[in-house]
Every structure is written in structure tokens, then in C-alpha cells.
Length: 295
Figure 1: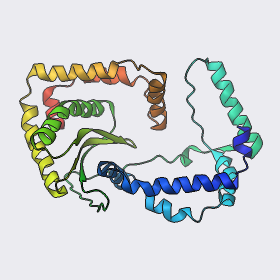
Figure 2: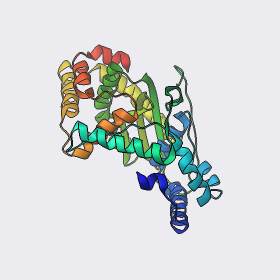
Figure 3: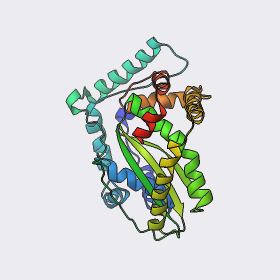
Figure 4: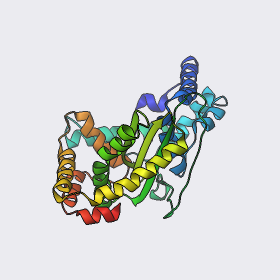
């Protein structure tokens, strides 16, 4: 912590890191089209965000002195949330955080942010029945990608499990229909998309065929799946419920995986550390009729 609060930036190291960031931002243009689709969906739906182009445009103006001067300003008013997970007890964890707080106060006079200053990230709410298309020209790859996103509201226990169960059921028929039957491309995927408290179902296809054609086939699949979900037998439905239950209750095999789960609860400010047991209990009460109504 002493090093963080008293750091003196090396100009040579600064130039190396700055150039590395420039290459990283520039190289994104050569990423696969489906990665671009994920990126632009996030850009369009996030309330406050800066694009790669915007960051590149201001990169040349940033100097060592600007970054150096920003450090005490950044640390002067700060909100700290920490996850200390592993082979240590509560007292040790509290002692570590006390060191962090005392060092910040001593070296830079840090003060806590007020609750009203803790601005949460927010997602753009799409109105019911709306349809938006955002097109971007890719001059590097011959293939293109289409991501179709169906926003379904805010995250809460029952909506979470309805969406996850829908994603569980739609996964195989989506791949079979768009990849195996339609042969649109090697990259076909579906699943839940969650960000800043909002969530929805996404379908992504990367293909050599035109985006307009691919989008039409995705819409065709949705019509097919409407019939598919209605024709599910009770046994098939319960098999999907059990499959999702087993997946959610599976114990993490690595410490880092469990740590990531805990940190997601903190970073999203939901703090539902018993999420698995709570949501699985809710999952058991969902009926086929309720799921179809949700769809």
C-alpha cells in the first residue's frame, strides 16, 4: 500500500505500457466478428461507456505528469470493497483491511465516498416490442456475425431461473437448427446475457452468409422453438430442470472459481452469497406453463 500511494512513475516504463495499450486497442479491429458483436451490444446497452476509438483518440494527449497527478486525486476520495478468501480467519482479514485504510489516510488523506456518490452502472432499458438494428462494416474478415438479444428485465430470483432454464432448453435445438440444419457457420451459440442488473437471452451466429439472411434464420428458429417448447413432455421438462439443478449445485473444483463467484456478488452489489441454494429452490417450483409464458 505504501508503494501504491507513493509511487513515482518511470517515464520509460510509462511509454512501453502506453504503446502496449495502443496496440491492444488497435488490434481489436482484427478480432473475430462474433467478438465485435459482443462488444457493440455492450456499447449500445451500457448507459455510460467509452469506445475503443474514443480511448485511442485521447491516448496521445496523456502524459506521465497527468497520470502522476491523478494518483492522489483518485485516492483522496475512495470507496473500498474487498474479498479476502482462503486460508485465513476473520481477524486476519480485518487487520489487512485496517492496514489498507490507515495507509490511505496517512499517505494521501483519503476520505470515504458518501453513499450518494456511489454511482451504479446501469443498462439501457429496451421498451416492450421495440426492434433495433445496429450495423457495422468489417473490412478485415470475409465473415460477419449477428447477435440477437431479447432483453427480459431486471435480475431477481425467479426471473433469473426462468431465463437460465430457457437457456438450458434452447441451447441444443438452437445449435442443431442454425448450425447443423441451416449450416450457417461454425460459431453458433445461445445463452443468458447479464450486465448491470439487467438480463436477457442472446443468440450469436458467425457466418459467411449475409447478416440479413442470418438474422432471418434466427427469427425462423425462434418460431420453430415456440412450437418445440410447447411440445416438451413433462419428463423432458423435468430432465432439463434436473440438469440445470446439478450444474448450479456442482461444487467448484478450484479455489479461484469460487472466489470469482463471490467477487461477482460484490462487484454487482447484489451480495447474494447463498445464491445457488436460493435459486435452485425456486427452480424446483417453476412449471412448464410458466416457462412458456415467460418465453
